[in-house]
Image (cartoon, rainbow, N blue to C red; front, side):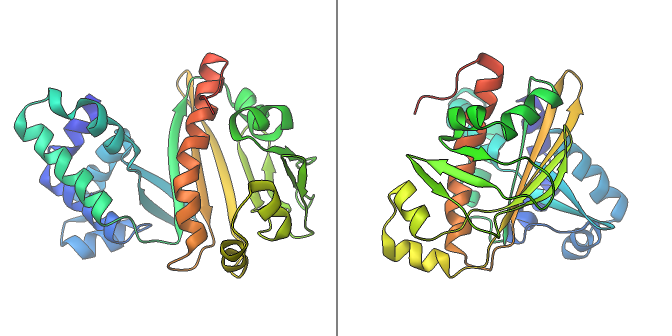
Length: 261
């Protein structure tokens, strides 16, 4: 909590968050150009924001992309804002309001969380059907080898498709697979309106990537769900669903029980 308030206290860092809120996934060079700030200053401020878990970074080839992670802002604002002095609370409230009024407009969902577990245990939770069904409500079945199919099972319905495959698999480090097919099986499994499913089904197939990194006695988990077109309805839907799924995963691994359904 203290790290978040410290990060938000500086107007330059708030400008960086505003810039990412307007256009997520920027490189250091793009952030410097857009804000007319020296590279060294921007790099230093980004380091503080990363330490506070307000910014998440993802490598794309040789480029390091920066994404806004609004989770700490919303969590702290909702719980603590009335207990802090007007200046600090006001800065947080203003940024929270900006995030809600002008949500991040980008084609990727990026989320970082820290879990008191081990890389091996987290990998098990991501790949074993008995685990995924507890916190996700879905049994994911695969041998988790690159190119192998991934079957989603929910409410007695299996979602299967030749294009639902594992893309990357490094046990304890990295897992990526294409997203499930949005069609009749999906509509039945999730009881979704057929007209909505038809619209979603016309969008390109997306993919999700889990990156696992040791972080002291805990583990840093970064989830990137990308491949969406601008204005994607599926992107909006997964952006609402992932925080609950990942919070339930964290709770399960740390307490033995997922969040209440």
